[in-house]
Length: 161
Image 1 (cartoon, rainbow, N blue to C red):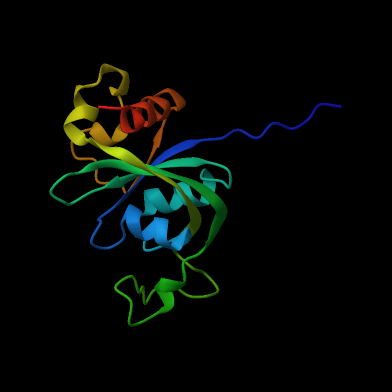
Image 2: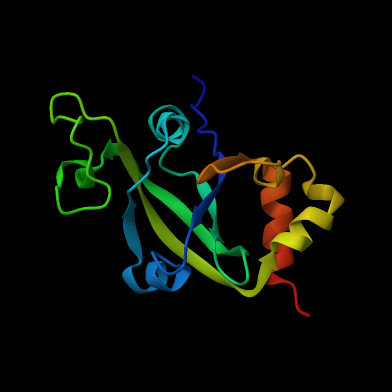
């Protein structure tokens, strides 16, 4: 009998550090990655992102944008509770408990890189060409990366200067 092999997938999750940073994740250790309000990303959460996957943490909309660390997906898609909270900026009055629109996954802190992997470095590295985050007009908060791209970014973030 063959043992079932789980396939790990690799992702890049973006967050504005003034909303939620790698330091926040390091402090809380694990968190529900909620507040996603894009149908394409919601579908990734529902259909593709699984417990055991790995993710790069990317700081966006800040002075120095880039990959700052690594995390692991430790819980699959669940209903995002913020969609039901009228006081939340992520409230969705059209979403119901019977037919929720939005999902979230739980992520766990793995590490903060000793050095930022800035966007210009990502753009200039030939090994990273083709990354969705580097495409013109990309605004998605979660994108897939290949294992080779993931490993390259890990090396860039952890190598000594």
